[in-house]
Image 1 (cartoon, rainbow, N blue to C red):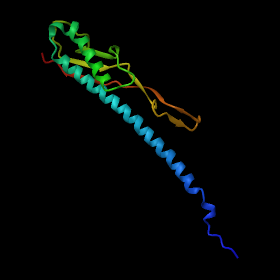
Image 2 (image 1 turned 120 degrees about the horizontal axis):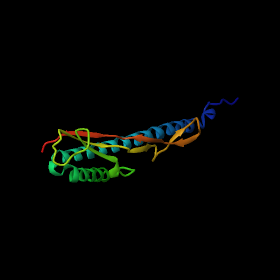
Image 3 (image 1 turned 45 degrees about the vertical axis):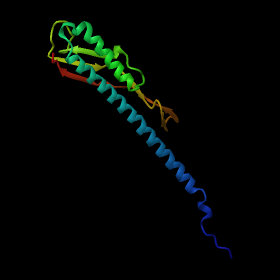
Length: 155
């Protein structure tokens, strides 16, 4: 009489379990990477608005509208793009206001505000997410990043 040990029925179970676990771990790693990238971009944009607001807060009031606003927009774009945000930030995405409205040469505002507007990224652009209901991959597109900084005018 020959006795079976029971190992014969288990010959591929470990490989199948590993495959399920690897898929889950890869999805978690991809999600962590993508959301980390979104936070990194937001942080880079927020730092750029702080740099711009700091420059505006000490700009000469005689040329605050004619010179400082354009220089601030360029400063913010250069700072954000220097952090390798993708898509690139453009000056049209940088909104500079004084006391909630347009800056006026020769008038000292109480506060200056620098904001990023109309900028969005796709989460899942590098590592697309798998959607089991449609059996396809996709990304979350059009996630708006809108940091802003308000500082008191010091000059």
